[in-house]
Amino acid sequence: MTVHSDTAIVAGVGPGLGQALCRHLAEAGYRVAGLARRTTATPDLTAELGPDRFRTFSCDVTDAAQVDAAIRQVEAHWGPAGVYVHNAAPFHMSAFADTDPSTFESLWRTMCLGAVHGAQRVLPGMLERQRGFFLFIGATASVKAGATFSAFGSAKFALRGLARELGPQGIHVAHLVIDGVIWSERARDTLGLRRAQCLDPDVTV
Image (tube, rainbow, N blue to C red; front, side):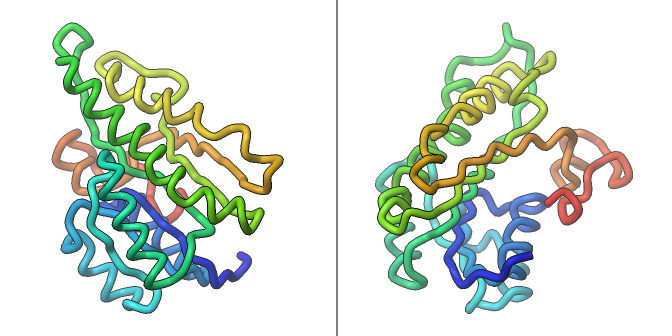
């Protein structure tokens, strides 16, 4: 893997894929800034990687002002981001008829609008340097939402369509479909799955 000295921002650094992404980016030489609603969400990861390679910055990605403030802190600490990963994705299952419209809006705000806030905030610096990378984390529901996944799927469908025109300007845009459930405590507690039934987050990335 190529070693970098650039700054990477990962929105959504909960247990599972988010923290695995942070580990891999740090191992590749990136200084990794995690965006989370609580800076206390990742104490073990901070201790593991060290504060010179990983820090958590507090913000709600649905709030553009909070995203701007958090990324200003990242830039002051480590400089402009060369990589932005959007992994923020609240999980929800319910029949379409039973899903309140506010739930549809809430999931879209986190998964899609949150990605717009983060990506547009770091884009000017990337365009100035004529290089950068956006990674939007999708799911099977990004292309084929199953029963009880209409709210989750519609938000993931929207995420898949972002920022496609930036390639000719030196900005690589990738949408990664994770075709399975990533192992985490949520998979165990919410879905009743065993580790053997899930994808290993470290292998997935």
